Length: 196
Image 1 (cartoon, helix red, strand yellow):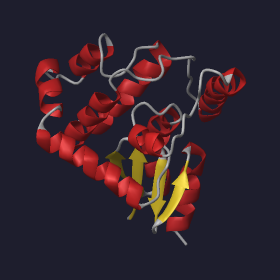
Image 2 (cartoon, helix red, strand yellow):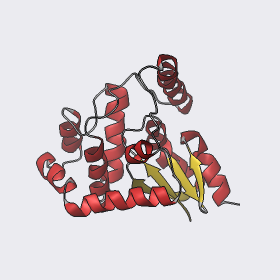
Image 3 (cartoon, rainbow, N blue to C red):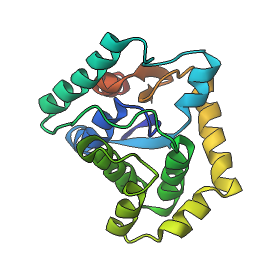
């Protein structure tokens, strides 16, 4: 079975499209994605890249509408705009790393994005974090404390360093045979490259 590394940051808007459809794509193509939460924010700051600045209203409006259109094309929906940027960006991603270690990470990421893009609830703060933890039968206070543990922070930094080494500059990104495929619309291209 082919494996493709899936680098993502909760906080990236277009990653909503990827995490919502990725399990169906895996089944369809009989392959596996390796989920790697990283800090796209840290990398973008290093590049002095502001993805959707407030003074570029047309670009921002396009992004929200584009996500709505693409979601509809995939058979689900997005209700935009959503709270952006995130106030607890790092915590959201560190919880994902903790969850991936413990076996509930994919469910956490998908549910968190669903609440963000379908209900307008910002990740890693209430009410979203309480609702997600309740639905996954997790203790919210324990999860937050454990996500801030040194070992989880270390894995987060390691994933971010790995993204840098692969010359990743955005989320979502897919690594197939050491090639970078950036953007939700490149997921299938990454799979085709893997099958070459």
